[in-house]
Structure formats: structure tokens, C-alpha cells
Length: 394
Image (cartoon, rainbow, N blue to C red; front, side, top):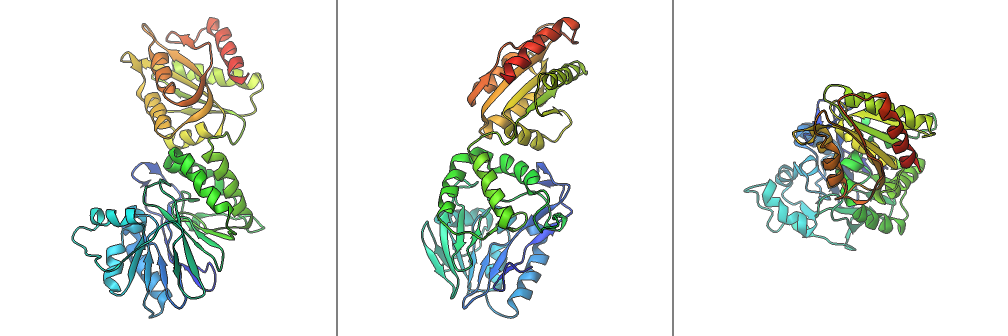
């Protein structure tokens, strides 16, 4: 794949992977992106995951056509992008590894026994790497989403090599396009990717966006997902600004429930019915015991309002709800209105636990009243549910 006549794509799709990072379901596979800049000097931009090592090495060799690369630029040390550094350095003994000082400290963690002595060029914010007609300007991007991350901006063709920024789940071969050439649905899997991988680091993403605003960027080359240009690029920048400020992207309510024997599920479905009748423009209902947790987290960040419905369990809360709220806590969930419904047959405890977790989060408004049902929702519980929904939508 050509990004341009001098910038080539040498990444690879992985269609056999079931869980990315051993936790995120990827039914459409995953791409591990890598690029080469061909100039007076040649720069290889990241390697790939060991799962696609053979394909990556073959594509690199084909692109080089017998030439020797001068630099291997490591933007991010995570193994899905850096697993092949030692092999590449062994293949081309004259090649220099370019990375941040923080990345250099991590090299022994991943490549025990490999020596990079005399072959490292450490770069920091504002440093440049001259390749001939192309020049790389390095942009520090710490905690997007590891501390050593760098991005680089190629100023001749206005290309941002964005590390894990602007990535998405899914293989590139699986991407669908509109008639005008724009991506058919970049946002769906990019949103799930962002909130589950970078979601905690909104402030750091905002810092990078401010730096990007000062640059003319015509192309974004991420380490996962399709290359972004034109309308796709503009839309990605717009959404990243919303996401990293923890603002709601769309009006709506997520009703997330954790039900043991079906009583709480029935109550959650009633909550959704009432919300729709009261004018909620969109209501999404998710079963925390069965639905993809990463997708439910995505929806929690997508909408401004959340209802948590859970059964009591061991004087606490049914574990799927605890897991959900714990995930939101560690991902920096904030700026939302939340309503609570608990179920308990003899000693309801779910509400107290849910409230305790939510109170640890920033700028969360827990609306009253909390609704308590006993085993099964009764007709007499409906007025309290209606009151809770009105308070949530206010």
C-alpha cells in the first residue's frame, strides 16, 4: 500500500486473533501498522506484533528492494508494535534505533540479552531527523497511552505518525467505504478502542491535540486501523476532542443491568420503557453478564446519562455490575448523571456499593430517588421508577 510515492505501508492484518490485549473481542481482526519512508536515508516507522512477523519482514524486504534502512523509529514500546525490534536490528547491523529516553529504558525489559550499545539515537520534543527531502519532527505524547510514547510529524508531506492515537479495532481489509471514498463507519470501533485503551488519559490527549492544531496535517498514519485523510481525518480530530474532554457525544441514556434470576432485568427493561415514554431520544439497554464489557463502557462514555440496575449479592453488588463500575473508575469516567436501581430479596445492598464506587469518580451527579425492589418488580414500584427517570432526564 502506498501512502505516497515515498511513504509505504508495510503493516499486516491479523484475522485469527480472538482477544486483543487478552481482553477486547475483535471479531473483525486487528491491524498492526508499520511504514517506511524512502529517501536519501530510509526510516522504518515501527515494527509489528510477533503474530505477523513473517509478513512484516517480507513486506519490508520487498519495499526496500535491496536497500539498507538507516533508521528504525520506535514510537511506542508495546509489543504489538515493537516485538520485532531486536530481529530488525540484527538483520541490519548499521541501522540506528530512534526512540525516546523512556523507551530506551524499556528495551531490556523486552529484549533480554540484546545489545543496542552505540546504536541508539534518543529524541525528545522538538528534535528532528533529516532523511533528505523528508524531515521528521518528534512530538512527545506521554501517557497516550504509555509514558514513553512519541509521535512524529513529517513536514514535507504533512503526515502525522500518531502511535496508538487515532487507532481502531479491526483489520484494514475489513474496512468498508462509502461511494465518495470515505470510511463507512470509522467511529464505532475507534470509539470502543479509545475509551478502553486511552480513555483514562483525556488530559494527555488534549495536550497532543493542541500540538496537532499548530501543524498542517494532511494524513494521519496510526499504528492500528486505516490511514486517515480528508473528511475522515477531520472527523477523527473532532471526535477525539469530544472524547478527551469527557463530553457526551450523543444524547441518550445507557441502562446497564446485572441480573441473577431475571427480576432486575425486567426492572431495567421497565426503566427503559419509562425513559422512552418521557422523551429520552435514545435508550440503550445492556446486560452486563452477557454483553461485551468494552462496548458497554464505550456507551457509558458516549451518552450523558446512565442507569445502573443491579441485584444485591453477598451483602454487596452482583459482580458484573462491580466489574463495570470498576472499569469506569479506572478509565476516568466523569461528567455524567447517574440513577440507581437495586434489587434485594431480604437485605438490599447493591445501591450502597454502586453509590460508593460512583462517588469515587469525578463530577458524577447521582440523582434521587434510588429505587429499591424486592425480588420482583411490582405495580407499586412503577411510580418510584417514573420519578427516578424524570429526575435523571431533568
